[in-house]
Length: 258
Image 1 (tube, helix red, strand yellow):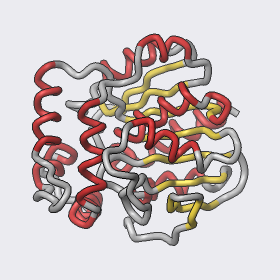
Image 2 (cartoon, one colour; image 1 turned 90 degrees about the vertical axis):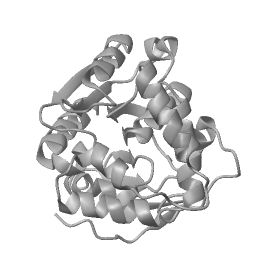
Image 3 (spheres, one colour; image 1 turned 90 degrees about the horizontal axis):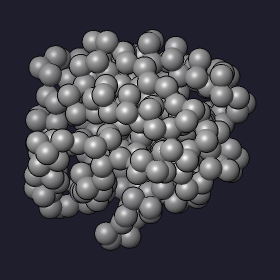
Image 4 (cartoon, rainbow, N blue to C red; image 1 turned 135 degrees about the vertical axis):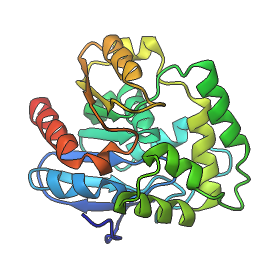
């Protein structure tokens, strides 16, 4: 498929692609991306659900938060667009936010799908992500080649080209703010996951080197109503690269969670 820009609605302070009717499904993208990263999921899930794919603050067409935002600020921004209980699906940084929504706003969250979620990075991974965060000045966007290579390897594809365009054109300050939080966070507290009562799906790629399969399995062990599923041959950008498998898993999860 192509990853062309789609019309937005304003929902409170955030911009979002909103389409379909039925139970509410909220989609939250990762750092440096925008709502269109969920293009294949929007097309599939909007056949039976009301889908809201938000632009994170400082991304896409959403204004940035005040200087020096916290994880709680991103969580509250997304909570503000949920006017009814939703199935919340997040990818990468969006998965962090989705799990925190379930922890801090349980009445607004029917279920969570956490795609490529981080949980307890090892020392090497912590040092690498902190180093990348420290390089961001909020004024200019660095060459995204190293990021794209982590996500896609050396493969040339429409998905890679789309992500490159989004990374090159995102607001440098919005990217810096989100990435610093992503780098500093290490996943939801074990006690919070233990207390999470909604269904949780932990989905990642078998070839994912950062949001690893073991991380998803660990989250699933901690949350009482959670399960992990691994898509073999997929890596970090599996919502874009393995759309049919991801859509099938998400559709089944949504149906079971209603």
